[in-house]
Amino acid sequence: MKSLRKTAIWSFLALALTPWLYRVARGAQQPALPARGAQTPGQPNDPPLNDAQARITVNSNLVVLPVTVKDRSGEMIPDLRREDFRIFEDNIEQKIDVFSAEAFPLSMVVLIDNDLKDKDAEKVQASLQAILGGMSEFDEAFVCRFDQFFHPGKGFTSNQDLLSKELKRTNLDTEPSVGTPGGPFTNSPSINGHSAMDQSSIDGSTQIIKGQPTKALDDAMYAASTLLHNRPRSRRRLILLISDGVNGGKKFNKFSYEQVVKVLQGENIAVYAIAVPSAFFDRKISPIDRTVSPLIRYSKDTGGEIYHATKEEGFEVFYARLTEEARHQYTLAYIPRGTDPSTDYHSIEVRVKREKVDVRTREGYFTGQLPVAATP
Image 1 (cartoon, rainbow, N blue to C red):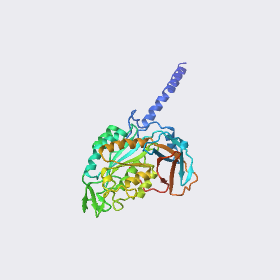
Image 2: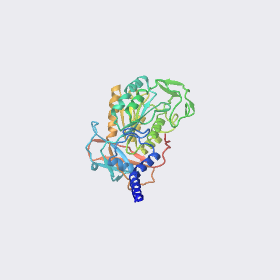
Image 3: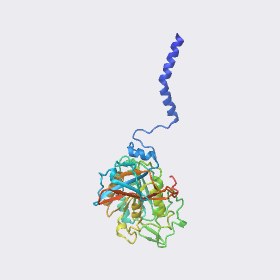
Image 4: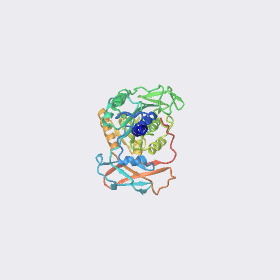
């Protein structure tokens, strides 16, 4: 009788303790979860996925298009529906598989020109804290600088206190930087085989070698794209480029504009450019021209926007405007049908059934081999 009672007691204890033992075993094998509200380093602080975000995350065959629609006064139009849009890939109309007007969290590389004229650098420096005003608790940013080299910051963070400290410590040089560079594709203070000290003249704060500026804008844009490579598809990926648009061209960039645009379009990264005052007024140094200025070309070809700042207040307004615009774009997604999958490049056109509107999205995407984007 006693043995039967003992057996029953042990059976009861085994059943009662099994879930607890299982949890203990799992806890010994798995790392501890972060505290509620904490952010794992390098991981985005994501809100719960809405239906559109979940479908985009799961289905990698979808071509995702963030689309901005504005009226003639530049105001965003918020009341469009799925049936108001039409998508054409390679001139063939596509079925819209996913439509959303809900906000998406942002993953943003803030790419700051470190080689500006003194007055421009002062205005940018004074405005940087205002970037925080346009960010939500779920947005994340990675602060970087560039001149003839790429200088990455401390990584993505959605912690506004940490980001505020980093922005405060971001000192823009008023003289050309000739120190040891940083970034994924530079390992010595040289510019394509030329010594960084090899200067024949200095115009303003921009180095000039044999009549050509050394600033490597294309390489910096490529480096910024590698930082966004692993951010989730459920987030908007963008580069906030603050610059005068001066670029050293092929001689001082390892990557061409065409190569970088191919990566940006392939990674679905939009460029929002803010042209500093000298870019607007000093046409000798950086002509704001639709066929020349990389600021306009990058923003136009990736479905972003360009703003021309003339004073410090202009920067602050633009920071808030561009983050709100990027966060609240329409999201359209489709699986390509009827097009040639063997073609490297596919053009995209989005039409809206409403008159007198401006529609912006990326102009196409590449399916062929992209320039190697080393994961940082």
